[in-house]
Amino acid sequence: MGTHLFFTLKLRIPQRHIGKALRLSISTETRDDSKPSHNLSAFGALATTLAATLGTGNIIGVSTAVALGGPGAIFWCWLTGILGMATSYAECYLSMLFREKDLHQIYIGGPMYVLKNGLHNKYLAKFYAICTIFAAFGVGCTTQANSLTQTTSSTWGLSPHIVGIAAAFVVGLVILGGIRSIGSICMKLVPALGFLYIGSCFVLLFINRDALWDAVLVILEHAFMPNAVLGGVAGYSLKHAARYGIARGLFTNEAGIGTAAIAAASSASESPSRQAYVSMTAVFWDTVVMCMLTGLVIIANMLKHPESLIGVNEAGLADAAFSYLPVGGNTFLSLSLAAFAVTTLIGWSYFGEKAMEFLWGTKSISLYKLLYIVMIYIGAVIPLNVVWECTDLINAMMVLPNVLALFLLKDRISS
Image (cartoon, rainbow, N blue to C red; front, top):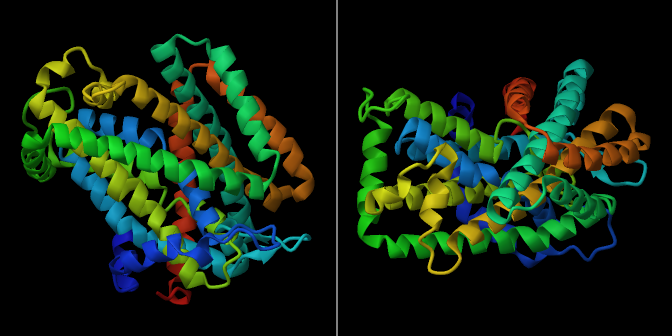
């Protein structure tokens, strides 16, 4: 959060240009993917980033944040997104600045190239790349595959083995086609899934409109409550609201981890500032919009339908709220979770691929893709309590060299 605040002030509040950034992200030039190039369009890079970040964190993550940190956690999650846009801008700007071209004249970049070419520290660069590979197999692969099978098993009673094989097959077809294939699928799937989910949230907020203003007040009141109240294991206090809200916000948008910069560097755009603005909108959509809407839906439902929370666990608050959709509420949420899990599997495969290429060259990519596809199946059929803890640790280890590079190269960044 300190990094977010620093770059917000250092770059003279780049968030004020969010309107310009959104216009750039949907402009014809930005979306043009027809040129004879193996690089992504600027919008394709954004869609790949969103594919990796949109998912269970926006739904289940927000649900657990409210359960453990109280309604005030929504405010801190939202604030993390607002300020995190500045860090995302800085990451992507530096990644564009220090990217390289491979033997096929395809742009490659990310924090490992910033560490190597900007700080001239190959050891930190290799450390970051290794962490990215572990994160790809962990948070990007096995955890998402497991979330997918849990959702399909609880809703439709499908076998984890069948779901794991099907997911591995579908994702494998996409990632074996390379970055253009990944970008093309993400450009089609991510906007459709995102806007469909946002639309369902607005329907629920309209249904619970008489509780909406009270929900906003409850979120703001609990965000700054100094002492634990209302009972519960954790207690709803400022400490817990901030801790879980910030943690879930960082988990969903990954601003500070540096993964968005890997996708940004693959863009055919020649302007670091332009691409950084486009990539910055991923945090806006991911946390400022989708996490906020999910939080409002959950809190409004808690106020209007408290009986729906009886026997609900930490991850079930969203499920309880979506049960009030006029048609197929719980089924729709399950389909959304499953679809988001698949897009996250596709998006994260690219991040790990670029880390492998950095360490061992293009000859290692085929082996990586094969291992990634196999890990999807393994993740679908094994319990993952320990893996979740390990991936949180790996993400923290990725933050350290990435944020260090941001501060040491801060004078190279302009808005």
